[in-house]
Length: 79
Image (cartoon, rainbow, N blue to C red; front, side):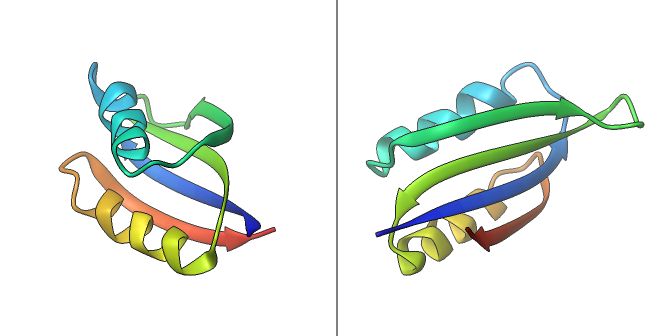
């Protein structure tokens, strides 16, 4: 197990936060830290999510996140 940080750029919609966190919950991930930050563009937000899991499970979560409609970009960083 290692600490993984997932960085997400997404459209700023009302239900974005609940859809992202429910995806983590359904997959059995425990979120260690979550930072929700606005960008210079009002319609985009950046999220930094830290979880403790295997790198392969982090990659799988990244693939699931990119399937969500509002997600524009997602990256995985091993800490």
